[in-house]
Image (cartoon, rainbow, N blue to C red):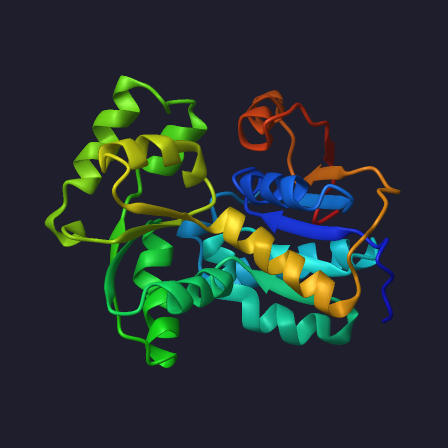
Length: 270
């Protein structure tokens, strides 16, 4: 399928955490139209089986392909590790699929050879070892250590960030000996940019805090430029779809996207 530069960018996540990626894309590529899909009926993906995450991802890809998206961005680490290869095969030439893991792995291999890097993420992302395996394949001298920080997502979703409670939880995790002497820390979950400043403060701003939302947006821009698909003029409205709607989701979107957005309910299974 031949897309034009004016075709939208599809972005999906298990919920609304991926709006941090959507926001980074909006900041860097203001002329692009975004169609965001938050699978709020099935969140979180972090504790679902691989088969379930793959089934949800295919269904969402269908929605985004039907809306003519030129690129589909998997704005979720769990879905990126479980469903990326399958989605790439499924969409074929209909759209390019980009995940949030590969741009970060490339960034690390280009900038952090011979150094120790920490990663924090959900249990699913950490136990999948996906970052470690991809870095090993590149045969780069990077010492990657990963720590599961499962309390951070519910903490952020409940609005506990930039306060004493979140500082204490973050400190408890980052004190782990595993993370001693790191040069950089990968935020391996799209919720974590919301506590980026607190994490940086813990390290007295002496450790690089690596935010996959910004790195993915930069990677996407380069891809669109190379393919001649960069949109020069904004011609379509952004749309934000969710598979289940509650007022609290609508309220939370402002936290992740930095502005109020209107959520449209779109059932995955009728």
